Image (cartoon, rainbow over all chains, first blue to last red; front, side, top):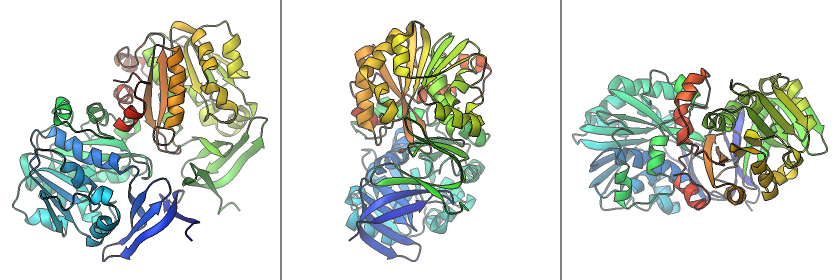
Length: 286
Length: 286
């Protein structure tokens, strides 16, 4: 019945990615966005918010490895971690693999995303009931403004700066993030792509630089995001993402990864010249 | 008239990339393949062979920087360079920027590709008439088998291993490449993607390992190739691509690049774990 169903994500008015859909597993409309889970050919199950591909089972490990393990291996002893967004659960899943982590608070605004992933994508959502998890359905912007907790690492696992995620790209939010980070805290955020969204990167980095002493950008490969070469920002009150990274901690952890490794950690901060030029003065990558 | 024309490249039976076409500039059928040049929205002019995207003006610099400058900055004094394929001219253009290069021989099998690019894509083809160029329309497989020249660097700028490029992935070809390389020669080849074409990478690396002491894989970002994270292989009779690379030679060259830089040179050899695992025993990347 669904033999001829394709999803097309229009990256822009000139570029689109089409993926063959085997079956629609869930389709709903929350107060924030439309939420769909589909079974695809070749990419496993896929989550879409407002028609944009968020996660596919085939390549989600790349995104979740790099958003979680880079800050958690730079911070020498991350105990208290906050995830803003990340409703599919993949980021929390990776955070919880670190033995030092005592508590992972996750603040996702859209219950429908969490519920749909819990029911249909256990690959990412399987640890959302973990005893160390503190899952809050609520507004991350409000949470960081009101909490009195201090976090070692904050991960902003947001969608693009349209719809519910827009305030997560603003200065007020990052001032609050700064205030609820420990003195040696680190914040890592979904950082878009230098190929097609340099303007968003510039604006996010300007905000980070108005609050943190230094900001950095690091890259990874995403199969279904426009441009492929996607990125995260890294800002910290005191740590350098490479000079304060001890590769031995990765082997000592006993963890293995499908994407992340110690060499790639440092290599991810080496950017193509066009990205370095476009972000000149905004990033402290050497 | 062409307002509703899109090109769709089917990456596989489940994934396709669609790009809006403004105008068809050239469309022909040679004895080897179909050759099309179109003006796109957002990506400038684009060359397609057999319907597969080869080059777009917007991102060709990434491919051509990384295929040319990695070997040419590892070899301490590259004078005589051979390019197999590369009919659009972009690889030769980058080779010719190196002051040490005295001669760049390019052997492209399909005159139609060269002619179409000369007429419609001067951005890549502009140096094909350069006084140091030795452009041969002919079979690269036959050329390396018959030549008595010795080359410092050989670049195999081929299409996928279907159609005319198939022999460029075989052992007989690489044995001949070895024989016409100088004692400290380097060969770099288009190396597909670990995301969607690991089997081709494995088979190419097996061939390289049967001829060269060590083989390596390095990555770069391509906007319009399936998987985004694309790669080149590196094999040499004696040089290590990172340990024998002196970053100072890049700054001393006075050249500037939109993609390549000295940090990225080394970083490109740091691969994601799934690629390292899939290519275990076949690459000497550390």
